[in-house]
Length: 68
Image 1 (tube, rainbow, N blue to C red):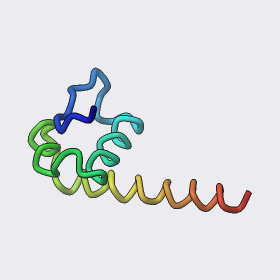
Image 2: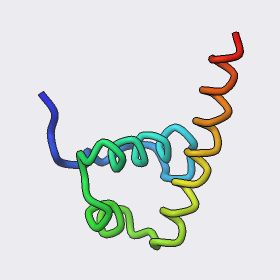
Image 3: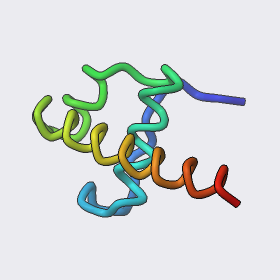
Image 4: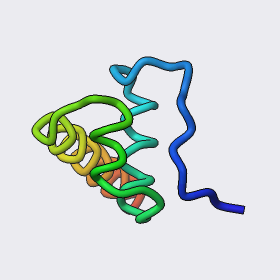
C-alpha cells in the first residue's frame, strides 16, 4: 500500500539516494512540492537543482541501458 505521506528518513538530505527518492516520489505524485519544501525546510531552488541532477543521471542511465 502506498502512503501519501513522507516518512522522515534517518539519512541527511544531502545524500544522493535520499534526494533521488524524494524526486521520484514527486514525479510519481505521491507527495506535493509544498510538502517536501515544508517537511525538510529546503528552498524551491534547491529542489529544482535536485530535479535537474536526477534528470541528468536518468538520461545517462537510460541511454547506457539502451546502447547495450
